[in-house]
Length: 244
Ligand code: COA
Ligand code: AMP
Image: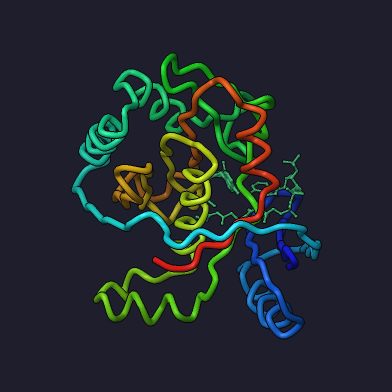
């Protein structure tokens, strides 16, 4: 199987990233055509095609739920409640919310990956606080089939590449041993975020930030033991998710 990854920059700044796992030359060409169209604006694009030796297959993704609120504050309170159901203490969730609101990169602004937060103490555990840790090498078995499935379930309007990419990422995180996740985008126009966990599923929450705000990020709540194994799984182990 091949891992196909695309990232694009504008004026030295990362603007878009996406990836696929493919098995045949036809799939590779189709995926490449799709990924080439992904970034809206860029002046440099990097494409990586890499052989992956072994791939795990997971039958189902986390279940999707959606909740809309009028105010960011209410959305954040709901996130505290849901993450509490997953066993993350309130004070730790509030620390994570404050971190993402302020910009989790100690040099200012966004990180290039996720914060790893000790779920008991709230301590940051990622080896590099500007970079964070990125979840890579995951994909759906059949993206076309997913559109059909969502249509059948009456939730077709929710289908976007963004949702599908984030859902497979959150599913891989839980599979690797992340206890729960908090996320909102750094896209100033996109205010829907989510919390995710094995028990609570993939819970879309809107609005997690005000329109026009360029700050975003991800916090993975983790156990501090076996951290290296967790990072290795997130970054290196390939995972295909079969269906919703
Ligand atoms: N954000 C910011 N910078 C990024 C980045 C990201 N997501 N991904 C890559 N970069 C930049 C960094 O400068 C990185 O250097 P670093 O490792 O010191 O941080 C450099 O590109 C090389 O990164 P690398 O990990 O080698 O890239 P890659 O070719 O393996 O591709 C991506 C990884 C781009 C596919 C992956 O990071 C990504 O963005 N995947 C999509 C994530 C997704 O689906 N998110 C959900 C959408 S809601
Ligand atoms: P996005 O959902 O793409 O807007 O990304 C929101 C934030 O998540 C970014 O600012 C990064 O901090 C982080 N991030 C982006 N890609 C990844 C990834 N592959 N794994 C973990 N964190 C990521």
